[in-house]
Amino acid sequence: MGINIDNTSTKKLVEMLAKKLLESGKTVATAESCTGGNIAHNITLLAGSSQYFLGGIVSYANEVKMNVLGVKKEDLEKYGAVSQAVVESMATGACKAIGSDFSVATSGIAGPGGGSAEKPVGTVWMAVSNGKNTVSKKWNFDGNREEIIEKATKSAIFMLLEFFC
Amino acid sequence: MGINIDNTSTKKLVEMLAKKLLESGKTVATAESCTGGNIAHNITLLAGSSQYFLGGIVSYANEVKMNVLGVKKEDLEKYGAVSQAVVESMATGACKAIGSDFSVATSGIAGPGGGSAEKPVGTVWMAVSNGKNTVSKKWNFDGNREEIIEKATKSAIFMLLEFFC
Image (cartoon, rainbow over all chains, first blue to last red):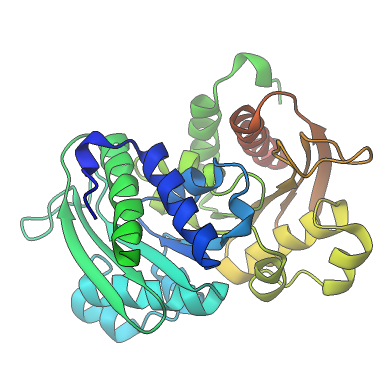
């Protein structure tokens, strides 16, 4: 796609995503754990976003991941909330719950607490989906809580853009 | 309660809300339309928020208001999305969908488009609820889109705090 994520602001990535969605007539939804609503916030800062952003689920508690997004209890118990299996279920669950063409999901550890040797603070699993095909990736961000949230938000928008191209 | 909203930052209000929720052992959820996830984002910027913030629904599309939050189609058709009836249903629906003790809901016109003589840009209906009792208020904010979102976010946190006292 030729986008350099480091040299492109979140705002610019959001504008590029908006253009792609408007051109294709497609809609998008979010399923956020560690980013806590900040992806939806950045998407909806842009005027006219109601044309392609249908809504999102902030699933902080595991019960919300299960009850609203359809994440399986067995996956949460076996792999933990910050895992490929859970974030992929969150993404497909968001398309279904919200009724969107595309979705992006995040689950990670924004810190300062909650980290472990296996999953240190800054570990964030993300998935993008069209309800059928799902692509996921594990990121490792450094910085404080706010910085990790901002970096994860930017990367989530970037993954959505990549999914289109 | 004695809080001057104009002299208190959103961050400080969030910290005061966190203290109240931790002391009471109660949980909170959000149902956001015009604020687009920014209330959830501000609540979850604070470390440890997973102890009392269960999750939220960003219901930008009317279908999400109906299908996820249980807002009645008749209310949307009769009163419009930016109305007391709809925002109160969003608040009670959030408590139910998320399973929280308390909730706050917003529905308004962040602009620059979408305004009318009756409901100009900056009109925001908000409701706070414990699932049984619900309090709602219509606000009128000035500024650009981002400013209206930020002011509405701050006022929503303030309404949650007031609901406790």
